[in-house]
Each structure stands twice: as structure tokens, then as C-alpha cells.
Image 1 (spheres, rainbow, N blue to C red):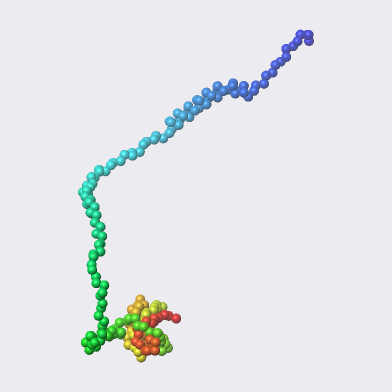
Image 2 (cartoon, one colour; image 1 turned 60 degrees about the horizontal axis):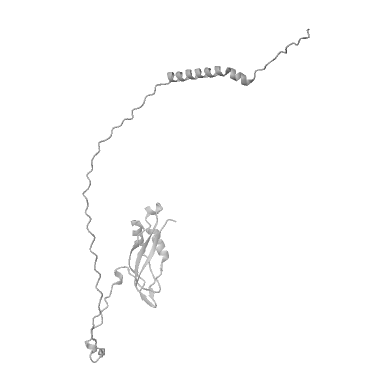
Length: 226
């Protein structure tokens, strides 16, 4: 080997940036060509679009006759206020006396008779009658048997019951002189049965203080299945 210097071998390694710069042109134009092909292929094979018919027909407008204009009457005239009362001047004699009433000037035989008692019939219709001691039932056992006897079989077998209130007119001796329906049970058959049972009732006489008086009282008669 001679003494002359041997040139050294230079080795260069290509970087990723340099590779990108070297292949950029081919990648760019390749992607542009691919995008163009895909674009035209999409339009070539895309189904044909048609617009639907959205046309419409308008109905003929119908003219409406307006009602005649109403004339509003003018407001009523204001009522005039009443005149202020004026006290009239009058001369009154302060020495006014009324003659005393005496039996000498009005004898008893000349007086009008006292008003007669109209004598209202208490038993004619139910009415308020004052009393201090109410009448009581004397024959409850007989009343219960009558209720069992008069209970309509059809209603009893069907389990239908009800309550009817009955007015009783009781005289001074406690005897029932009259009876009638006060409040219906809602069933005509039960009302008729209640009136049949009412004929069995016996009462004590009502008292107004220490005097026996005739009275109207109301009692409930209930029919029920036990």
C-alpha cells in the first residue's frame, strides 16, 4: 500500500421525512385519480331520483254574508234625584187629651162577643202537637210478630229490606185513630206491609204536663233479613 491517502467511503441512511418527500407526488396523484374514479362511479351507478307531485287544488272560496249592523241604542237618561223633603210647618195644640174609657160609657152588654174558637180538626192531617211526655209502645212483641207475618215473601227471600216511617195519630186514651206513610221505604210492597203492621200498634197516652192530649207522632218500621 502506498502512502497516498485512501478516500473514505461515505454511507448515507435515508430518513422517513426524505422518503415522504420522495413519494409524495406519486401518492398525491394516485389519490386524486382514485377519488375521481369513485366520484364518477357513484354518479354512474346511483339510482335515478324523481320528484313526487305535490300539486294541490284549492277550493273555491265562498262568500259569507255578514249580518246587518246592529244599531246600539243610546244610554237611558239619568234619573233625577228625588227632591229633598221639607218639613211642613203645622200648629199642633199641645193640650191634647184622650177621654178615659169607662164601663159607664161602654156597658158590658154593648161590648162585642169574644172571638169564637175555630176548632181546627187536629186529626185531619199530621201537624205539630206539643207534649211533654211522648207516647210509648205497649205491645212490642205483638208488633214484631206482625212484622214477620207481613214481610213480603218475595222481598224477604231476595234479601231486600227497607225502612218506612209511619205517622200515627194517637188520641187522649192512647188509641191509634189514624196512620199514614211519612217517608217511603222505596218499595211499594214494604210501605203496604208497614201500614198493615201500624194497625197492630198500641200506645200509652201522651201528656202535656199533667194532661192527656192527642198527638201526631212518627215511628220507623224496618224490615230486614236476619
